[in-house]
Image 1 (cartoon, rainbow, N blue to C red):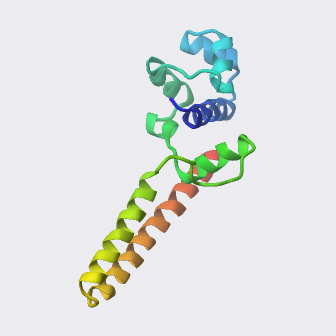
Image 2 (cartoon, rainbow, N blue to C red; image 1 turned 45 degrees about the vertical axis):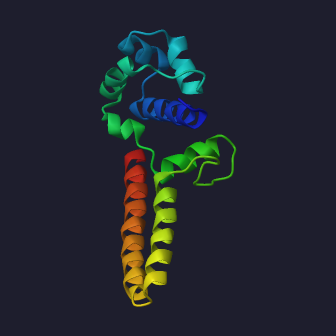
Amino acid sequence: MDNKENDRTAYNLFNYRQKAGITQQEAADFLGVSRQTVSKWEAGKSAPDGVYLKGICELYHISPNEFFEMGECANEIVEQQNGENAKKTVKGVFKPVSIFLISDLLICIVLTSWSLKMLFWVIWANIYIGIIYGSYLVISCLRKYMRER
């Protein structure tokens, strides 16, 4: 697990425990670990093994997908917690969105160089893709906001 994922996991563990109004000791007792172990997980010094995932999700009444959701809002919050600038990209790591945008750009260049008539279709396709991706970002941020309320 890389450092960013560990920080995000620590943030999620702390955040969900606070929302549930549970102490570290209560969480530790439920999961069958020591309070110090829960403290290390929340501090990002270590991460829980996969065997504890089911118990963590039961304790906080969430699904594994909710726990590991790594939307743009979650990335921004974790980076702010680390005192970094609120950039949405991680240096040295290609996210699926970056790979998609680069491949889309290459396809657009190839299609428009092949035939100028394709420019119209390329523009419209990219407008629709932009609308869909923008909607996804708005919905994921709203879901994150509503979950925190």
